[in-house]
Length: 364
Image 1 (cartoon, helix red, strand yellow):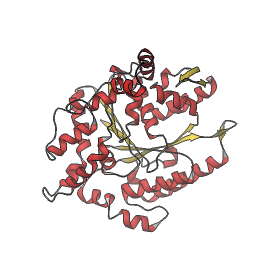
Image 2 (spheres, rainbow, N blue to C red):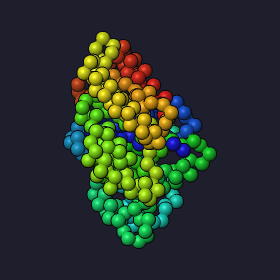
Image 3 (cartoon, helix red, strand yellow):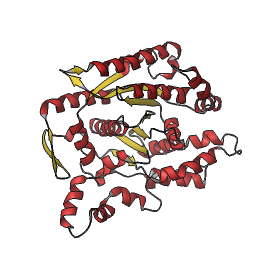
Image 4 (cartoon, rainbow, N blue to C red):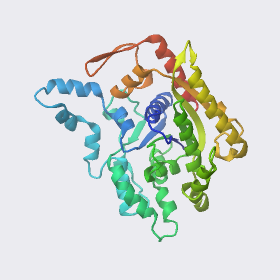
């Protein structure tokens, strides 16, 4: 069993999109492996990408012209249906059940799992989803308070292991089939993000080549491992929070696995000088950290800069894939329609995009 969390302390870097690509491509390539996506972001972006067949919604909207789009969405949006089940067929439903009995594992987690292909026929059948849910944000304070209970003495560690317990139950559900977990995280370091990270063995860090992303990558290191990179005060405070407590209580945290430089602007086939400069600064930062703290890396013998993947910026293809729920392998060059607007996908940039994303998935 291998679990990858996709996280950066900065929003808008493509975590959900890359999680979508990783899950769908891995499931397509390895049909005998159960690929589980656990959506631990209240916005449920990856759940929407996997579940919502926009073409079906558009066709239905055309047939029901007397009704508003919101009415159609309420009746045909799969997430709305999953949230409306009893129990909620979402990650929030699972966490509600854990709150009701905090220190007893749930053996049958099937009520919280769905098969996206039942809603979106473009998704591989061996891909399964624990759907995201806006209720996650509301539950977070109750989860945090439960983790602070004085009895049992290891309440914090037990609560922080709830999603890891979920992956263990799902692995058992798969029986003799291999299982892979993709966990999409929220940028914040809220309790539900901590649950996600505590469940993962490996961490994929997407970033955009800008200076705010460099600082966010440094925050990832400080928050998870307690190491300050360029500011000693960051390290001082990080050590008295999550990182230190995880070490004291023996809570496993993921290793730094792959760094994805996403949406790289190309000029004549190579990254622009500005993007390359920031990219290089992040590589140097992580390579320097590697000299002193190899134990936080998934491949300790290799320099972190060797685990960098560059994904060129192709906004049109990204938008078509995410809005229409189309996996990379199904995306075709030519005109695509989104909300009555034509979006053109050109063959040459699509092929470069496909090659880069396929290389990224091969690292998993």
